[in-house]
Length: 255
Image 1 (cartoon, rainbow, N blue to C red):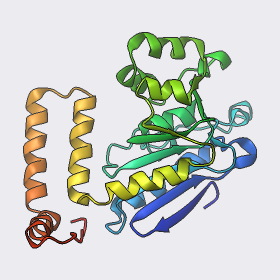
Image 2 (image 1 turned 90 degrees about the horizontal axis):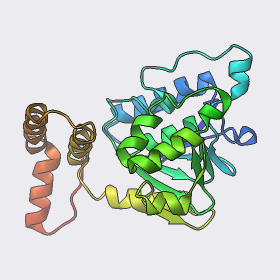
Image 3 (image 1 turned 30 degrees about the vertical axis):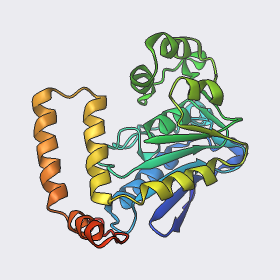
Image 4 (image 1 turned 180 degrees about the vertical axis):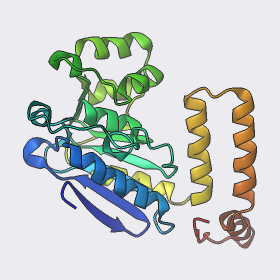
């Protein structure tokens, strides 16, 4: 891997954006690489949860502007920024461990994750309008869905930074932890998630995505019924019922 470092810890995948001298700024190749990583993660039945973080003192400072100046920038892959912002096939949980600045595209990537753990020195912003661009990688939609409208619009129209403490107060961040502890805290959350059945987790994330985009009731009910059928026909469901009756820990297979 050229941009990311990838590690496995049991059924957990840790993806570290690894360009610390540039605060992990994104170049065109990085989006393609991350899309491949997360597509492989989705297809691997031996992995259940991913953590996305950044090397050094930043999570991700956004797009490397030098690529635009040099004319080497190109469209994002179908999966979107960082392989996650528009990856509708990614049904496994992803946790963002934000260890520093998350700006522009980096903030959009964090917003696309299911849970967000931030260190106390983390800061968030979509400053694209300050350099003549706009946050058109999903960030505008995400902020308007997840924050009160007035707060979202203040961030979007000014490019101002949002502190980790304020992001937590507004419900954008799940947990704020001391400096240097974001990854460890994310691992602790991942361990809790992995107590649950992978098939059930994927169905849950799919239904949450429908709720977030306010899917029409008919579509939501149809998809919920299909998900219920998949879950109850799974090996995980049978194992969960058996483990409960036998008073033991279940052994999940993810199928």
